[in-house]
Image 1 (cartoon, rainbow, N blue to C red):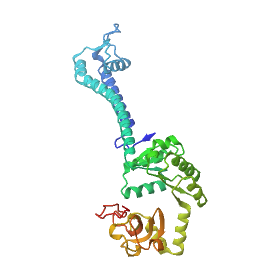
Image 2: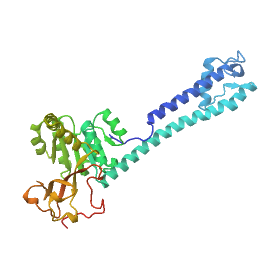
Image 3: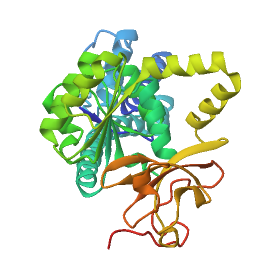
Image 4: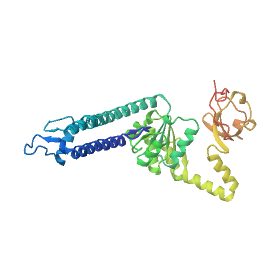
Length: 354
């Protein structure tokens, strides 16, 4: 099931509210007729001239509000007729509007939802989108990082079987596909076959491996980033088709160890991992005016150079001089937004191979 975030109240809430209003109109009309029962005549009870009891009031109200109008019970006094003309008739109209309006609202809501899902599916096929499997702590942090760096929320799809994840993702304005990410049909509904990136962050390594295998079968070209809890599963995850594997338990353990041996070093590492404060690690294009320079001479602190799909440390002799087509891994102040500029972000020209 694909569920898009709903900006309005739930249709079930609206339905319940309208049913309560209809019930209030029904009860109010019954009481109105019963209190003025002396002004009504029951044509089916000729033994008494004005034999309208509580049951008769319920009967008269239901056939009147539903416009059935059998005519066996009728107002005979001036007061009862005026009450029918100026009170019960407007209540009848309001009752019918509620019933008809509720039906139309339910149908319209279903139609709008079908239209929104169809439009969403079309937009997913026309733009680069990201699928995030699992919306726990790691998944939310990954989405926050993507959004803070320019990724459109409408181009992010969450896959998670949890009702809590559905609620939280909707609160964050994200589309959700509810289901098990190890099933091909669930991933197809999320648009994995056309996704540019897939982030897999469930809490079980076996589920992550199976989900990675399924994603790779559906989309051989997607860039898959997966999390594992245990280091021993990294090679298995890469064999399953993941391009990048993050070991969560080892990463936390290393950070704890660094913080224990050197509290200041631990704080710097934590700063690098925290978005929007202090320092940031970023990948960016090499600019034209940087071609031929040494990595150490750039304003950004270059820590690695990507050349021909390989990563070289800044001190590697292979990248002594920067060349067209290189990409840089840099450390720079977080205030320099956007911290990972694309071509044209600051009016610069990227130094691509052409």
